[in-house]
Image (cartoon, rainbow, N blue to C red):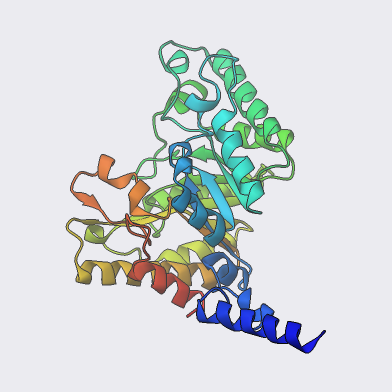
Amino acid sequence: MPKNRLRLVGALAAALVAAGLTTGTPAQAHERPATLADLAQRHGRYFGSATDNPELTDTAYTALLGSEFDMITPGNGMKWYATEPQQGVFDWTNGDQIVDLARENHQKVRAHTLVWHSQLPGWLTDREWTADELRAVLKKHIQTEVRHYRGKVYSWDVVNEAFNEDGTYRETIWYKTLGPGYIADALRWAHQADPHAKLYLNDYNIEAVGPKSDAYYALAQQLKAQHVPLDGIGLQAHLALQYGYPTTLEDNLRRFSKLGLDTALTEVDVRMILPATEEKLAQQADWYRDLTAACLAVRRCVGITVWDYTDRYSWIPAFFPGQGAALPWDEQLQPKPAYFAIREALGGK
């Protein structure tokens, strides 16, 4: 290269460095800080976020969603009211949008959820069903949806929130009409429709050892003994500072692992009574650090998903008036102490 062109290239490079547009060598220019997903992958785990369709028009939000995480959960777009609004009429619009977004960003999808007692369409809840009728409706819904997303999702929350706090079965439309066997049936039908998807049972307030998590443990033992295709237990981990940290979380994860099951923290947030203070945010950070460490300590705890990553789109204030500030990023998409605590637990700076 002629000397004058060499000097020109060198001057241009120096100008770019001075302007902050690059940082010296080409290799350095492409370096970026490790994301939560990067850090989790070093431990063989994933780090994910839930999301919902209305917020996908927020470009600042979607930029972080697409870069910081390697697993996405649709908050509402795959629930029954969205996917089968009329009997036998299926609508994949919302679920497909999130699956497509994940694919663009090279992320996997935790699909949520096939069988739940909430957010059901009126055609399902406004009439009485015989057991045979409802069983046919449930099988068709599960297999149609799972087949639609076959090969496109990592896992399914097949049955969501099946137990009461005391460990008794929740009196849902499914339990009252079909009995407890609906859970095994749902898992078998989902497996038939997509043999490669991981199949989970998912619930809240099962982080600690107690009556509700004991019920899942006993059910998991029973299902495994019957060779029902169950791959994992999802512990939602919707926590609240005022109720205390589940100190037996690691022990609980470990006992499910010993059954040959994966576990995951699937809907994590840590809410507080507002206003948020430095003291509360520091305690929240400790909890995020501790739950991350608990998952890392148990080999078959495969990953963590926060229930959306920012307070801007948290479900908490609408359902728990006077509470909030539950997530690792604030409403301005700025990282909070909790974010740095998670990074620390994952071995990052």
